[in-house]
Structures are given as structure tokens and as C-alpha cells.
Length: 254
Ligand code: HPA
Image 1 (tube, protein in one colour):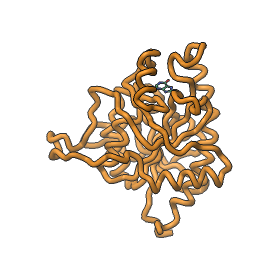
Image 2 (cartoon, rainbow, N blue to C red):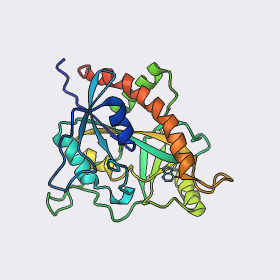
Image 3 (cartoon, rainbow, N blue to C red):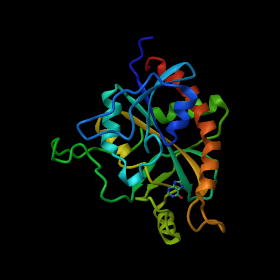
């Protein structure tokens, strides 16, 4: 096979993934930055091996602001990952970001605070200012768009992901500000994950699943039940995109 690529998926619904695809048993479960949210698993999707990490732990219990993003990204890197496909549920801000739509954002605005957001912060590793103008890896995004096309699944390429601190949802005024800032999507887990992956030289992209209209944009209040229901619908299509993407990623880079 001779592939130099090793793909990792970071997901929010680990139990479901592991249950559906089985696993070779737990892998790496500790790092110099502390333990990751869960052990890195080795799953098979569409007959391709893929590393998998449940961002919120197994069972799903770690809040977005308490996730040890450094440990998670370090664990995937130490397990050999070269490419990371992150799955994120988001609220929709722009008119096109309707519930049920899949996005492959191109930009990020970071509204989080107090998260450990760098390996190179001058404490354990020396200070470094990472170039990050394009937070997501363009070739990986292009490959994922191709995979979606091949699978006949609609996915929007581009858009700005605004990352809030959580775990509470936003106020209507916060969403109006994010709208003025140019955000299309709002989620709680995109950062510092993307920046940390860049620091370790891994190609990173996010498949963002819109599961609700952002706060204040719909007459109805946002409920967890509605979010989970929509996430479930989106995951089926996400998995179909992954199943097409993995064979493409297994071909030697050309
Ligand atoms: N805001 C922030 N994060 C989210 C949302 C939201 O509306 N929906 C799913 N994740």
C-alpha cells in the first residue's frame, strides 16, 4: 500500500463510532500534557484503518472548555496521525447555514478564553509564533469536497467558524455580534484544536454539521433533544463522506 498518510478522526459521538465500526482495543491513553479525552482507537471504516478519538470522552461527559486539547492532539500525533478530520456540531448563523447542512469552513474566529492553546507557550516547549492565516489545510479540504461530490452529498466549502467558550449557548446579542464579525457558524470545539494540529504539522480540516439555528435566530428555543436528533441525521452523511475520503487519502500523495 505504501501510503504515507495516517488519518485520524476526532468525533463528538465516539460511542456510536466505536459501536458501529468496532475497534482493535484502546491505544495511547497518556501524553506529557496529561491524558487525552479517551484512548486513541483504531477503527475500520469502508475497509480502511483510521485513528479515532472521542473529543468529549467515552462516555460523552467532558465539557468543551475542559477538553484537554493539547493531550488529544499530542496523542493523535504520537499515534502516527498526519491528517486530522474533525467533526463538529455547530449552530447556523448565516442564512445558508440551515439545520442539516454540512460545511467545510475555511476560516476561524476564536472567542474562547482561558484554554491551553499552544504547545509552544514558552513553558514546556520554547515560544513560537505559528503562522495560521489559513487555519484549515487546503488540500485536505479539496479532497473532502471531492469525496462529498463522489458520495452525492451536499457540503458547503468555505465559511467562518466562530468558536465560543461554552458550555452555555450564546445570547442573541452575542450572535448578532458574531454575524457582524462575519461568522457563518458557531461552535465550541474548533479552537484551540485546529491551531494545535498546525503546531504539530498535521493537516487539519473540520466537517461542521449545522444542528440548530444560532441563538435568537429562530422563534423556538434551542433544545438538546433537537440538537441530538439533527446531529444523528448529519452523522450518517458525514460517515458517507469519510467512507469516500479514506480511499482517496490512502492513495500516495501526487
Ligand atoms: N452554539 C455553540 N455551539 C453549538 C451550537 C450553538 O448554537 N450548536 C451546536 N454546537
